[in-house]
Length: 420
Ligand SMILES: [Zn+2]
Image (cartoon, rainbow, N blue to C red; front, side):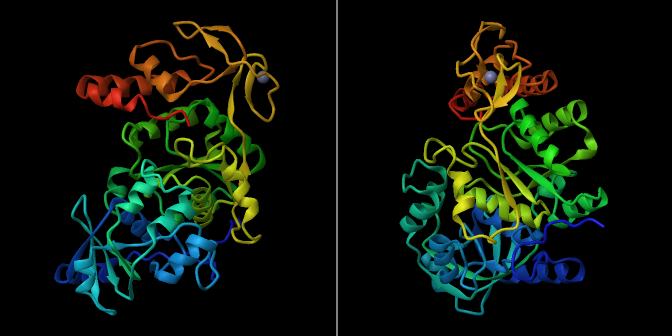
């Protein structure tokens, strides 16, 4: 019998807030009659995560004390470890019309779909600068996570939620989008006890494949778990990323050691804090380990390359059952003649390639996202040491389609940092 890591929280059982069957039908009818409040993409993603049990043991959006506790002490008032606040905000006007005990329907502002019914408990203002300083280590509005917090409405509203929908995720990402209970069932069926989650938000190249293979050497299997929620403009959409992973797994892995899945959250780009949140919800998904690479969940130069490693040693022991599998920056080294990392490879020179992507001199093959995009869009050869031909073909196809339709967008995208 398989012994997966237990879900997060004192009770150690998954707590999905998604209604089903008769109860769901009735709640949906009721939702139409209630006052409606809009939810941002981030809030909608959080609500769905609570719906499927990914954010176990949360039972709704946080009140002031839980907000403050998670911001400053990584824990809620009952002592539950929680590294990033999960809150819902409304305008002053909407908040003024509500009193404790009122029920409101939370509607995704992009799709207009009723996502949840919230029972109002507390209305409170927050010090957004404090939240950003603590969680993102910066108040710079150029930071995409900071920008989102600063754009939140004026009043946070807390209370338990009943979730009505998983939005488009099940229909649009059928076979990839998974609830924690579904992932756990697959792992159990395979008889796995230890599972390493590989967090992905960009196409899977050889360096990611290497991380996955190292993880498989020390666990029963790897869960390639990618983000299906909103990214930065210019990032590769999930359906293309899924195809790239399939191509790698089918051709270069033992498929019985790999499970692919997706989750509905938006990126917050909170670096180390987000690495902790990533580990927390992977615990709910049944993963004993989370692969944490260089600058995990970072953006720009806001975090040191190993801040996300260190933070796992700084939290009180026992905060999380899921452990970080700390990995350094990985690449192909021509002098080692194999995949390597900063931790293993003694060669330091950057490899030089010619116009056609052939090796000229040097050691380490480092391609930035921008360089890769340029090679793909100009139909140049991408070295097989960087990415397998099956993956390159899929990306080439994607960029060809993009160039014809929205050429301007590609130029904007070329400044992104998809190499991470
Ligand atoms: Zn080397």
